[in-house]
Length: 139
Image 1 (cartoon, rainbow, N blue to C red):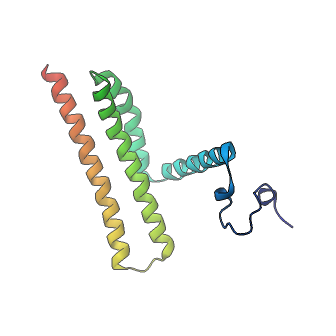
Image 2: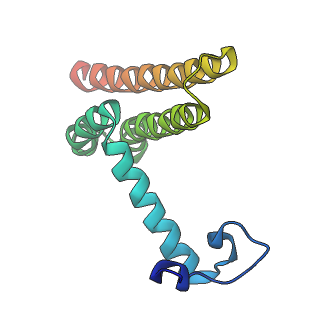
Image 3: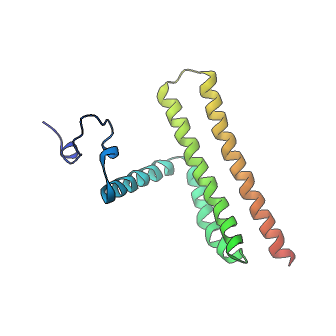
């Protein structure tokens, strides 16, 4: 006997992922649901939660501090980039952890590179904000 969820899935015997068979609005709605599930999963990670809380402060501040749309876009975008990179880093770490708990040089390398990407995005964000604050208070 099939569960209700399986009964609502498109029936395509050659497709392992039913999302691939969806078209139009159904695909968009399901993809949006998966994205929300990803944000909820991200919220469970301490680093992402800290960055999201910082974004609650920094995003409105970007609109107050930015002197034109370019500055607002740089300030807000740099904050969002940090959150995006953190989610991708968490995805890499989760995939590596799914493979197995044993130590492997390639697993360490992948995790280290994800961490380095987060560090670079944080440095970029800090640089953008420091330059904007310097410009704002110097004028």
